[in-house]
Image (cartoon, rainbow, N blue to C red):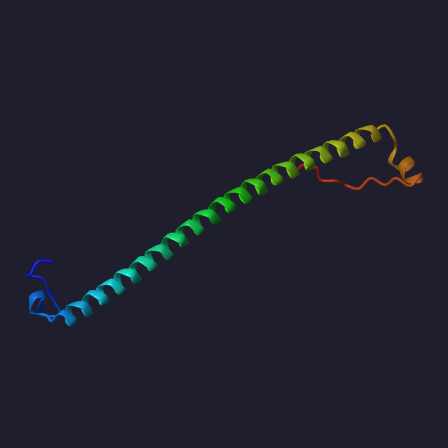
Length: 109
C-alpha cells in the first residue's frame, strides 16, 4: 500500500503493526459484510425473477381458461338458440300443458 494512505487520521507508516492489522481486519470484515449483502440482494433478484416467470405462466393459463369459458358459453348459447328455434313451431300453451315452460333467456351477453 502507498505510504500516503490515511486511515483514522494516521498514515499507514505511522501506525504500529498491531494498529495496521486491526484496521485491515476491520476493512476485511466490512468487505465481507458488503459481499454478503450483495449476495443476498442477488438471491432476492433471482427469486423475484422466478416469481415473475411463475406469475406470467399463471396469467397465461388464466387467459386460456377465460377464452375456453367464453367459447363454452358461446356453445351453450348456440344450443339454447337451437332448442328455441326447434320449439318455435309449437304453441307456448301446448308446451305449458305438457310441462315445458320456456324461460326468457338473455343470449345477447
